Image (cartoon, rainbow, N blue to C red; front, top):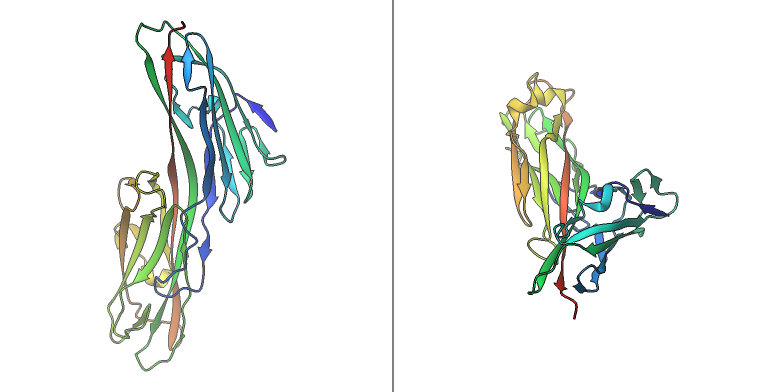
Amino acid sequence: MEHTRKTVLSLLFLTVVVSGCVNGGMDTDGPEAVEIQELSVTPTTVHESSSTRAVLEASNIGNIPGEIEVKQDGDNILTDRCQDMFGLEDFSYTAPPQSGSNGEYELDPGDGMRFVWDLQQEGTVPLYDLDCNMNFQLPFNYTVQATSQIQVKEDLSVEGAEELESQSSSGPMLAAIETIPGAAEQASTYSIEDDDTITVHMQLQNQETEDGYGTGVVNVDSEALEIDASDELRNGEDIEDLCEIPEEGLTMHEGGSELITCDFEVPEDINGPAQIFDIEISVDYTYVRNAGTRSVEVTQRG
């Protein structure tokens, strides 16, 4: 399916959720989601009033579908094309059949996308050569969730559940939940008789890739971060009063992380000798992948 001068690229992948992990232990699927297969500008030497073509091709190498939105002229992908030196003759892209329409597409694992910009040199070239560094990036929109079960017993003599469920997410940004052990010294388990507070740590981390620092930056809007907990843990209070949620948005470079701490009171009344409660964090974020830079030299004819 061929499209011309359509609208922007933003990529949505739900990260893989790994279940059955206890107290923060996890088996993640790695931070990679999209593989850049081609990034080129041809020719790399351009004479006055001649043309060059820029191409970016990438594939979904994750395990789940991703939603792509394409902006006009692909200006959010080819973010700098030296507009004072080059005019845009044409922008087009290809997407798999039946993947979507009107600039919004869903890529299944293994599907690819290809973007092409035809550029023409404009303006007078001085006696000396001019250099143009064209910058490419891929902004991905993700939603991730992490959950954890917490067990509260009447006292330490109660057996309760031997294992509690915990789900962590992977992808460019990892979301995970872990608890500070109570008197029971057992993962996510507390006693009404011996504990007063349940301290929960929620970690958000921009995972490192093989390409190293600078590959991608994670931006989190504070309004797109939600924490929820069982009513018994909240005890009528707002989550904002129980958790240290950042008031402003977060920006995390490769390897950077943010720790959110929540303190819940141990419920005084539970349903039976032991009861299990739930905690969840959900985050919408943008991962801006640095796709690379390509240089073009502009020279006079002759």
